[in-house]
Figure 1 (cartoon, rainbow, N blue to C red):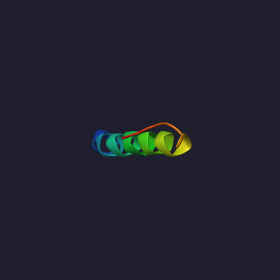
Figure 2 (figure 1 turned 30 degrees about the vertical axis):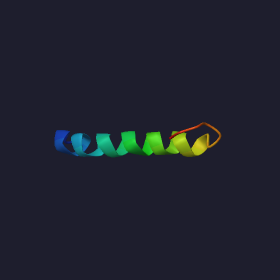
Figure 3 (figure 1 turned 90 degrees about the horizontal axis):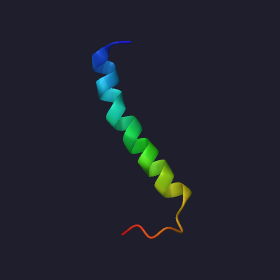
Figure 4 (figure 1 turned 180 degrees about the horizontal axis):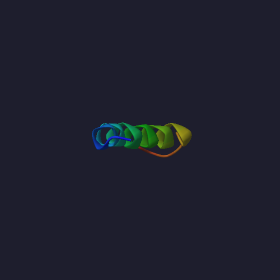
Length: 31
């Protein structure tokens, strides 16, 4: 795998994980 691809994908994966975690627990106050 190319390093450029990894660097481009890493931020997207992190954002996806954060969004997924936020959607998984909507009962938590996130303001």
